Image 1 (cartoon, rainbow, N blue to C red):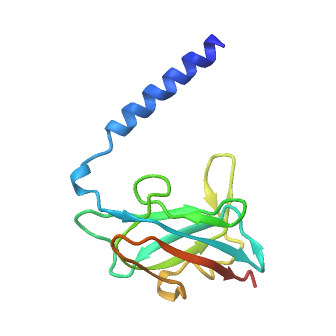
Image 2 (image 1 turned 60 degrees about the horizontal axis):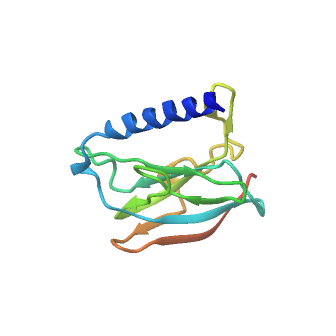
Length: 144
């Protein structure tokens, strides 16, 4: 019991140190919730990578990336700075990759054969408006 308390204290301290190293908060952009769910061939797709790519390209001065993974039910909430915090205002397209996690913690491969990875070919536009959550509903993809 004492060992678990020490471990918890060490983990809590580590998290505090990391959160204080967050960089320049003054450049943090306001984000708005973006959620949805992904089905592949009619079934919920678990552990599928969802990336939100700005159509105007990466902000050179204060770049951000927005992405997430689907849960067991295929549902997702996109993250930019922290879990499920949303996406900055703007015009985006979604890309999808359905890979696997290996023992080293790497995510690779694509059961969708790269069909949905190219932002230039994306058929999934997203408009994020100031002050409004965006529910994308159900997104249906195919593996073939």
